[in-house]
Amino acid sequence: MEKLMILNGSPRAPRSNSKEYAAIFAEACSLPTETFAITPKNHLELCSRMEGFSQLLLVFPLYADGIPVPLLSFLKTLAAHPPKKKPVISVLINCGFIEWQQNRLAVEMVKLFCTQQGYVFGSALMIGSGEAILKTPFRFLAERGIRKLAASIQRHQYRTFHTTMPLPKKLFIRASTNYWLAMGEKNGVSKEQMETMKIE
Ligand SMILES: Cc1cc2nc3c(=O)[nH]c(=O)nc-3n(C[C@H](O)[C@H](O)[C@H](O)COP(=O)(O)O)c2cc1C
Image (cartoon, rainbow, N blue to C red):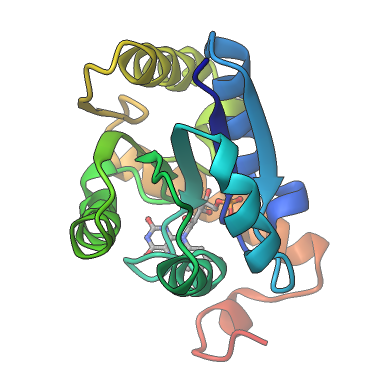
């Protein structure tokens, strides 16, 4: 019986968009699934738990045009401690910008890991406007993409999918700027502070 392991690679896993995407996937997938968040301390435990799973889905956000650090360091541990039977690895990645294409590089990074470490790469879903889409009337587009991703993994007909909000870029930028300014104000951070390179 096939089983699918979902790993959340977001640095803010407990309250992440990835957590919500993973939950939608688990609901849409007919295979038994188990979801885990990657933490700095559970890498070895996750590697050994992976033994029982034929499929692995990495759910993570795009960070600085690449894979976020929690996932990157987990992949390093996985390279050193692979399971005896390697699962097929698929990805569900979301990014903040409206262009789903921004995610391509991170997908290539996971594909490179698979090639170098002897894993089969399965399917990919790239979501643009991933910070926002679930809170808008376009949520159905993300859910539809996730259903397609789940079906392709279940049927072993691996494919790459993408989705985003069908909005003009100018409108998206205006709406997202207002969103982040309001978020900054709520957290006591000004526009000027957000525009500096200091992130802490
Ligand atoms: C430090 C940092 C770097 C980010 N880098 C990018 C990026 O390069 N491109 C992009 O489109 N979104 C970027 N984002 C936006 C996230 O991908 C987006 O907010 C995502 O929904 C976060 O998902 P999560 O809640 O699962 O962590 C970045 C966010 C943060 C906090």
